[in-house]
Length: 251
Image (cartoon, rainbow, N blue to C red; front, side):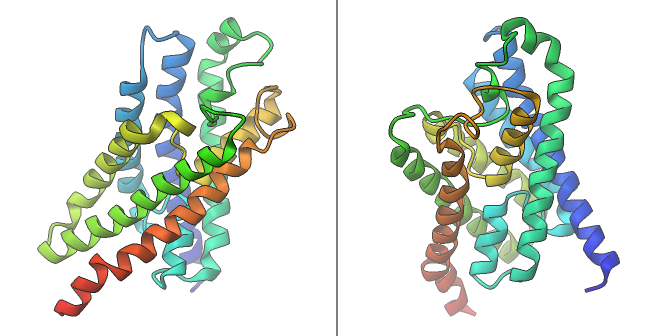
């Protein structure tokens, strides 16, 4: 593949992830800084679903992975070349970092109003467990959520490809992200995406948020990285050995 083609793919992946993260982090900021008056968990899950949908529309040229767990799982199941995974993952993480920075610049006055010491609002940008002393529960949550994500993404893509309605896939994947958030989002902030979590977490470290989960002596940051990589791969493999095999055997 030429450098020009690689550039176009990475630009597509950057822009798709950037758009997704702008809307996703923006709705969380809205709910937090206005202390529930202008947002709640329902608005957050709805907006994240739409954010993913629009991100897919924007990032379609590259396949709109928007998530290292997706790239990793697709490579593990021979749908995507391994050599592209690091480039995609770095691009997705950088896009998430930049989107978090833009959201901070938009909301920083309100953030400093409610948290002048930047000691309690890193959760606007990154995720934290409901049970901080039991990270294995969070790991299971992230494995489960990303298992469902990849299993059902592949089901959606195969279904709409078979019936000739592939243009509906971004909408259905957005709805999938909504329902995962509504069902399982409370336990670990519903990252299901290493870039979505780690890019903004780096931004909170850079700007001096003390409760960032990376430099505060905890291992919180590892859970939304390891869990989605495991869960996404298991979900893709499970799909291939069940529903995917049924489709293949019908051909």
